[in-house]
Amino acid sequence: MRAIVITKPGGPEVLELRDVAMPEPAPGQVRVRIRACAVNRADLMQRMGTYPPPADAPQDIPGLEIAGEVDAVGAGVLELAKGDRVFGVVGGGAYAEAVVVHARTLARIPDALDFTQAAAVPEAFVTAYDAMVVQGGLTAGEVVLVHAVGSGVGTAAVQIARAIGARSIGTARSESKLARARELGMNEGVVPGKGSDGSEFAARVRALAGPRGVDLVLELVGGTYVPESLASLSEKGRLVLVGLLAGTRAEIDLAVVLRRRLRVFGTMLRSRPLEEKILAAQVLDRRLAPLFASGALKPVIDRVLPLEKAAEAHASMAENEGFGKLVLTT
Image (tube, rainbow, N blue to C red; front, top):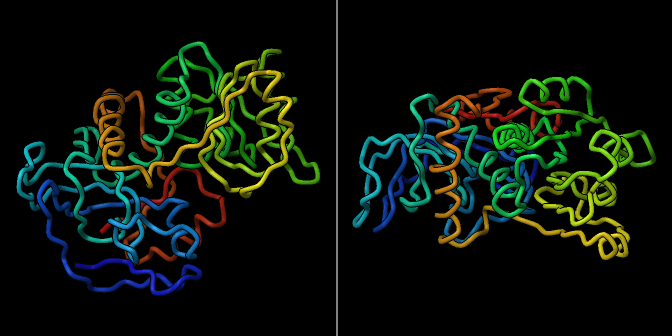
């Protein structure tokens, strides 16, 4: 089969299309003939050598989310059959024509989605729903601040907030991205200020949210955004750290966390044990897929490229100019 291989740590040019061995499913696994996969920030980090994949995933083939059909079934699998259309989050190996995964980490694709659309769903929407609703406890009537609102997770988050009756405020580096996010259900938007590090937004967020502040922050940027995010929160507010685009370090006033009884915690899908990955697949299957079937949620795709242009997709993502997901088709 064809696959994109990381030949060595480096820039997009180290990605190479090669013929590799077709994997075979072990007991409990299925093989998925991948029709489309999506590009994620984690793929760029893996390519650069800063984010290794889990031990049970292909070490030199990147990619975290897939859409395709089951074409081989391992012993003991009862949930899926050959020919089923499926999508899901994988530990790695998505930039290929096939991958083997545990059967219970996949969900069936709703009839309303084709393979390209389905590939843009799993990582973004499961991450957003898990962080905001399952772990963050976001409920109807609350206010959530979503950073990098034009990203895959950001565009998913504002749609999920609307679907559950929450109000969303988003941040982005351009008014054009905020305008597009409003079309997806974002209520208010802020372009961060032009201070020394370009991360000033708390005062304007509180003006939009009301004097109490926001109930939850979906922190997709990290770094110098974190102090401003904490300043945006209401008493007993929650900050869920998901991304680190602005860096891994921040200087915060811990007295603010104590005095206002804030909760700060992080989350990541890729490194979870199998049992938790199965639970994430249930979120996709039971909570999100019905909303795609009804039209309440929709995938947001910036560009679609063939698999052999993975390097071009990586270069495009690094520019941070897109809105929504980059999808590769096989």
